[in-house]
Image 1 (cartoon, rainbow, N blue to C red):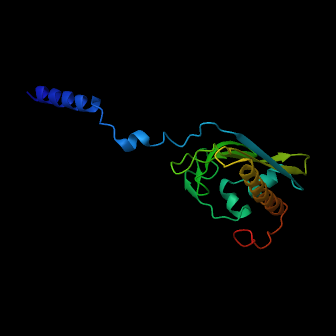
Image 2 (tube, one colour):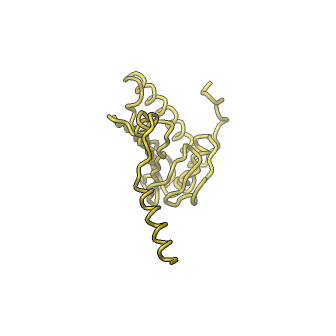
Image 3 (tube, rainbow, N blue to C red):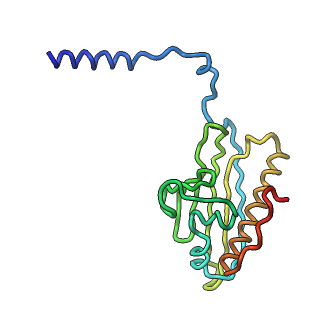
Length: 188
């Protein structure tokens, strides 16, 4: 008797699960998701020479949340552990997706409130000699959602300025210096 009741419930749940809900007008007109139909990818490779060995540079500026110091923004690890795969930092919800002894790569997550631009960044301390190195920072993303070539160039120039300043700050810190006072927010 219990077996018959159980089987009746399972059958009823199975039939309900297979019956599709009626489509609503909103569901039919909603966008399919954050994907961009025709992406155009851009990479921005930047580097700066540092008068310190790469391992020393990496110790000073290579932790995942060190970005807070050299980019001068708040940063906390919101999930996982700093330096481990899958760690998430508060900066744009960025996730650590790759690393070597002297580098890491991160990505920004997909969000439903904006088009997905496949944003990735890689930070590396690269040895040049036994006592010198260079910091290499490469950005990669899709800029097709910007209005036109002029808007894409403005965005590129803004990022080059922002991350060049970050490289200069990393160099100062890696060489044992102290950062000058931060400029006012908004670049004024």
